[in-house]
Length: 462
Image (cartoon, rainbow, N blue to C red; front, side):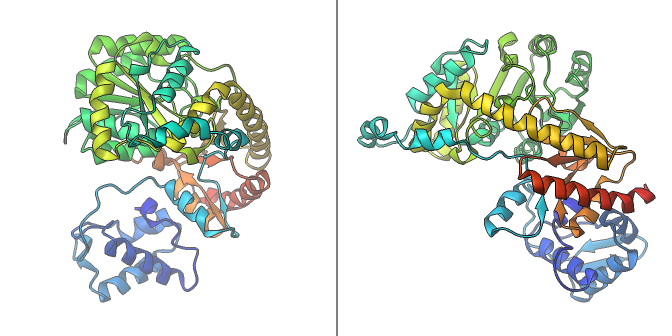
């Protein structure tokens, strides 16, 4: 409920009026369906870090408008709404939408998206010779530009996973690759195992496919093979979705021994693994990791140039056996007939320079990580961050639950960030939050100071 509320308390007017306005919008947009039971006034007040009177006044206003109705001894319900939208969309995407509105006074620490590299400009400015012969064709290549498939195959072969071009399907970003796998493998009610915590985007992809999500705990070193075996025996899943390399949100990386063990276990169990390695080129510590698929044929690997070069290219891919690639290509043809050839030609020029991009990313991320860890230790020494081996975010454990309330308080102080439940398929981890540090470092530092102020208020009550 709190995630749905978004930035409700940052406008003008009385707080209860702003709350009522946001709830009204959720009903009108269909995000809160007719018949949905709302949390009690007390629980919602605690979660939003406002007084119970504020929630009560908002509910009274909406009951007066006929939007909510209360049943004595039963609770408060939505009484009118448009068609229910089953998939909410990733909460982090709001930061991308907000970024188009121009500069403001708010500090956004929600997103871990990285700015593009100048290498992209260099590559895009000289693609004419490669593009000219393609313009003479119809331009629809669902499987992807052959030259790019060759480059992606070489990308994997160079880091220990021998790959041929017919094992590669080019997609419009990694999100499309994950969606196509989910659609092809899952029917409504099918079970999918999901790491806890996990990237919110993949949680929504699986829900959109109608899957029943079962969490499987990710420890400091990844998923335990014994726990995987027990989860498969208990839930009989069709798919395991995980991130072996630079996990989001923790930033951790599974070692080669754990990768091998997990791949072999999954193969023995007859379980397909979808390994999202979108962040693999944003490593801070250590060389590029060998993909888990090197030890198991049942692993489908998803990748992207969003973190290595630029998210604006919208080029991703998946690596699987040729038969699976051919099958998924037919699904992609029905979706969009193929990813932009302009972006693919540019990416094919960029991939031979991947080592250069990795080095640049590593230097920048290492400096940003050191700065944010040092500042956090000074301002909030009682917090326990996981030191990320890659990526641009910190996963932090709080001394006690209360992340959702803290985020609400921070919002009113001008700082936006994501609480732990955002990264859970069962709304767990309210004693965790994620801070992105990819933005301007002065903004990050200002955000941390405001966050420390919010914690001094909230921390007294948790």
